[in-house]
Length: 250
Image 1: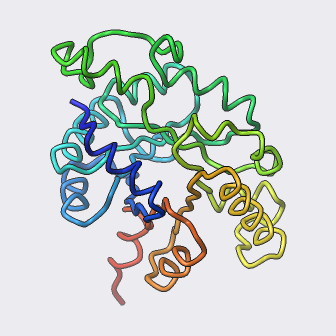
Image 2: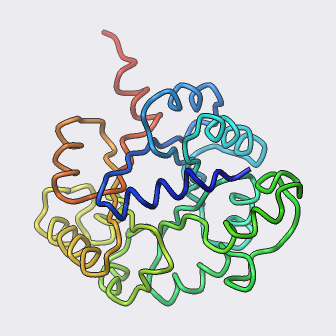
């Protein structure tokens, strides 16, 4: 069942200007989820776009995260109705939406995330509402789950000012895809990429929307710098990178 108090706490941290730091999972392992849940993360995202999750492992891992009083989020592989429905039905508290191109596209996608009358997501019994036993309690959540669009295209950067800030919780930068869209793939020190970050941060402040970014390579120095730059929603590396980085020998 959805912990609405935890969601409320999450949103209050944004409003007060605090930072929400999360973990990122690509490996479909309940053990890894349990280990990460022992850390002081605010949320853990399961990556359906580039990870290896299926419907069964997704549900099991969401259950582990939820029982640890940490917010389970799902980065869907695409913004289809089926993909979003499956993530939320499995018990995710919200979705991270990749590859958005415009504010109009986002407005259309948001309807897929919410129950009527706010949207057109299918209504049924499923794990997220305890197979119907918490149906009435779930109705309130289903009107406004956590929704975090990703800023990964130059087109969306240019259209951010037209977003309805009441409909989303934060905006989240995917650094590799954004740099690729800007024609400077992986060149995070390039003027074009840095100027784009400044535009995103400034627009988010003007709209009172928390901005977020993924720190792919784990670095406390980069984490502190990212926080100082004003980002509030931060994914701190990911399981596959940490495994590869630290499990080495000569």
